[in-house]
Length: 415
Image 1 (tube, rainbow, N blue to C red):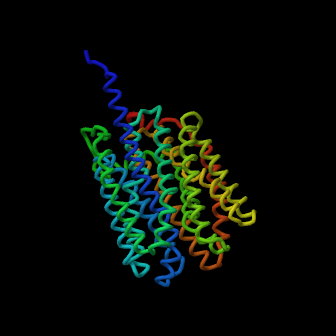
Image 2: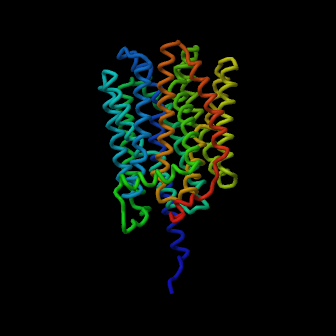
Image 3: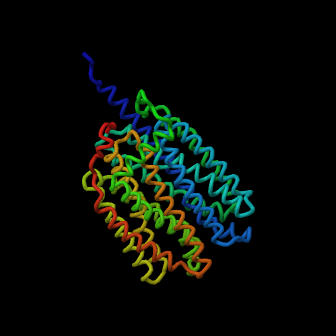
C-alpha cells in the first residue's frame, strides 16, 4: 500500500513552491520593470538622432508586435521542453537588445534592437511562460491568487525601476543608462534555475505531433470556442490602452507644461497601485466570476480616462489619474489567464495564454504607433485618447458573455 505524503514532505513542497513563486515574481518584476521606463528614452533619443516621435514609437510598437507574435512559440517551447531554457534565452536576448540600442544610430537599427530583439526577449521572460509554470505547479484552489501575486510582482518592478531609469538618464545620460539596464537584465539568468529545477512538464503522449503541428491543432480547437475569441478581443483593447499610456504619457505631460519629475511620479504611481490592483484581482477571481470582473475593469478604465481629460491637468489630477489607472493596469492578467486555465486545462496554458497575448500585443502596437503617428500629424493626442475610451467600452461588452466552463474539446486535458 502506497503511503501518503508526510508532514515533512508537505513542508518541503511548500518551501519549493515559495522559492518557485519568488523566482518567477523576480523575473517578471525585472522584465516588466525595465520595459515600462522606455518612454523616458523618447525625448533624449529623438533629440540625439534627430528622429520624429513616430520613428521611436514605431520601434516600440514593433517590440510589442514581435513580443506578441513570438509569445505562443515561447509558451509552446516551455510547455514541451520546460521553461528554464526559454527564460535563460530571453534574459540573454534582453541584455543584448538593450546594449545594441546604444549603437542604433538610425531608425532601422533601432527597430531591430529595441523592437525585434527586445520583443523576442520579452516573450521568453514574461507572463505566458511564467504562468505556464505556475498553472501546473500551484494547486487549482490557489492558482488565481498565485497568478495575481506574480502579476503584482511585475507591477512592483514598474514602481521600482521607473524612477531608477529616470535617475540614470538624468544623472548619467541615456547611453550609460541602457548599459546598466542590460546588466540588470542578466540578473534573470540565475533566477531561471528555479523554474528549471521544477518538472512542470506534462507527460508526452505516445503519438506526439510535431511542435508546429501540435500548436496548430491546439489553437484551432480553442478558436472554436466563442469565449476564447472574446478574450482575445478584450485583451487587444488592454494592450492598446496600457502601452499607449505607458509610452506616451511622459511626453503628453511634458507637452502640457508638467516636468519630467511629474511624469516619473505618474509612472511610479501606476506601478505602485497596480500592485494592489493585480493582487486584488487575483483574490476576487477566486471568489467571483472572472468575466464580470474583466468587464468592470474595462468599463472603469474608460471612465477614468474621460474624467482625466475633462479635469484641468495639474500635478494632483495627474496623480489621481495615475493611481486609478494603475489600479486597473494589469488586473486583467490573472483573470484572463485564470479563465484560459479553467476552459482549456493547464497542459497548453503557455501556448494559449501566448495566443491571447498576441492579440494584446497587436493592440499594443497600434496604441503606441498611432500615438506617435497621429501626434506628428495633428500635434496632439486627442484622437488616440478617444480611441482608448471607445475600445474600453467595446471590451466591457465583449467580456460579459465569456463563461468559465471547461471546453469539451479539452476535456481530457489535466486540470
